[in-house]
Image 1: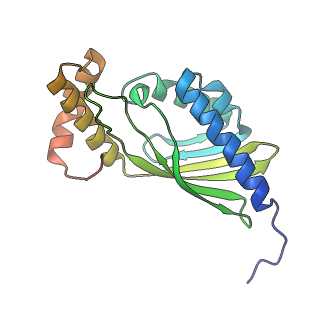
Image 2: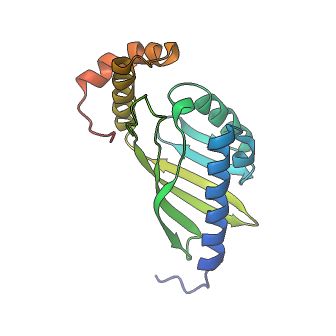
Length: 180
């Protein structure tokens, strides 16, 4: 059956709202204040994160993002730019690929992993749903690559060394790809 109902949001409205979303993400990454990012979601947002699980409501998302972005490796991710995005007027969604580069380990090397995010617009600058789709093992491998490079350069922090010790055996035994 074909959906003949008019689109709820225009492409222009979706892309403008997503541009604001991206600006807010960039500001949060720069200031490390994640509350404005959380406020872009509806109070009853459904957020699906493939490693962390499903969160319901802004406060669950807030707790998760603050914990994630204030500890290694999230605290070492410097930006979250979209590499590409597509607006789907019928569903009110933006589908994008987000880059997650880590800070320079000391020699200018860029180490990163990407994810696909599907965000559903609710209107008035608010998003009602987000799903982050990725292979968590690619993030582990990219983070391990960063740790090894930092260790080689003498810039490995205690927090990163602890993470490397905890997850290193798993990363060595799994060739999941990832990390540029």
